[in-house]
Image (cartoon, rainbow over all chains, first blue to last red; front, side):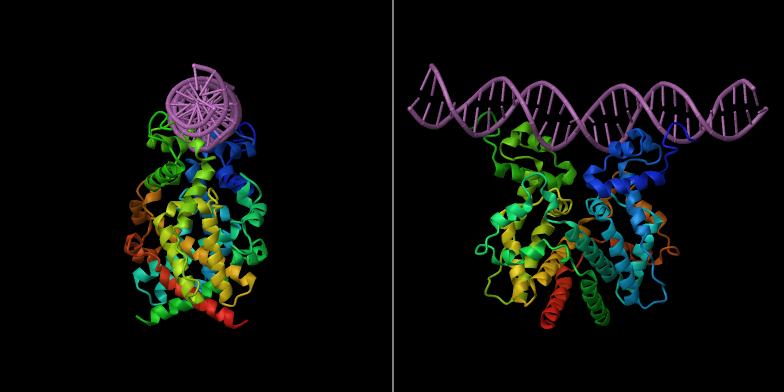
Length: 217
Length: 217
DNA sequence: GATGTAAGCTTACATCGTAAGTCAAACAGC
DNA sequence: GCTGTTTGACTTACGATGTAAGCTTACATC
């Protein structure tokens, strides 16, 4: 080993650098060439450790899935859902780029670590007394809540405006009190980073709904 | 007009073709060159009607927003939310590609038609008795539900697998009854297109929660 | 006709993912 | 020690992308 420089590439080192780069520059900023440059290496060298860019993104996504901790199977189902979904939310919220890669189908993790999470989730739902069909539906609903919350929360209105004028100016020009009164009234709150989705609150509502569905069977 | 062929390009004709192409080939399949080819024209000709690709995507997103019908402002707030969110869900569900463009920040619609929807949504939430901060939070929550549902629903496990073996095979090999019992049990339902998120059901739960929040103030 | 302008076309460039080939260093068997 | 073989890097090259810059054509107005 220690062939030429960089004291040895490795899948782990590549994934580390890829997460950094993606966090820093977004999904589009993460290119094989730029990633390689960041590691002091040529682009094609990465392909010794990673099948292709898709595989790279899969690896990143798998890491996030694997950072989700599984609750004790002995706990009641609703508590398991709370812990699991909360842990998933925290993990994905810390890496919104990965969520974007997942929903845009650039990544689809096929690691046992990812499946493990899905299995635990489905297990809790089945234990709640749902049918297989309902369990899948509700699993999707919960995942949708997690992904949706992360995406909406991390799409700050200011950032996407690099290509034209700053969005605040545009907003303040176009949102007048008489044409769009409600938007105008909530404008300060819209730009307030404190006004994010209250994830746990929405989660409890869905769990209540789950309980009701299960009892109606 | 009628310069050479195609009997006159126009922003509308371009947007029409772009939606078709995006639906057919996905977001990555929608390129300026391919879009132009579809219209019997060179890529650069599109730039006479569209500022750049971002503007094109903004136009597509605006169209979807503008297809969302606003409820009668005289209706009670909860009914307005039901109609508005339902209409938004239907509109976006019909064009999942646009949702992906939105959440990946490739599109950010700045048309009055889009703002109109947001304003109506915030109006209903404020009428429910929420503070500005809570209204923004709940608006984000509802939007997250819509987007999340669409995304999770339209990420069918089979499609993302072009780059390696078919995912069913991989699933059936890797999901064994003893290692991942719950996943194994729900496998048929996971591949069943009937098992989508029950959007209206989840929506009612969030509306119930809204009512509770408002009364606690 | 001459002129101005709008809407096409052509060429060109930087950047992307990655296939194919080269080459030097590290290790295995003798 | 020497000698394959393997590994992991580098180099070159190809087709695709978004789009800047310039050219050309067709029509409107005078």
